[in-house]
Length: 88
Image 1: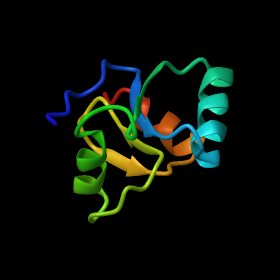
Image 2: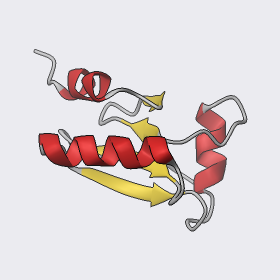
Image 3: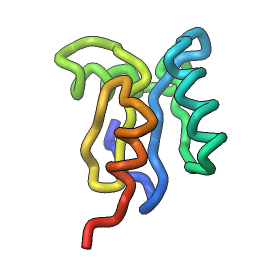
């Protein structure tokens, strides 16, 4: 799976339906008005492979991809917000 970077100011979150950490982060993002695209690694072909490629072979979710193409595993809302701030 090739991973296109999300649009500026948004993120892509790889998740599962049963992941509590994913549910929490999604509700925090909604509360803060941060747009995201959700990719369920159990439903989207090759999504789990991408997650494993950035997590040392583990299918750890939520895995978040930022507009600069970098990824973070189970980031806090504060980390997401700080990494979405445009750099001058």
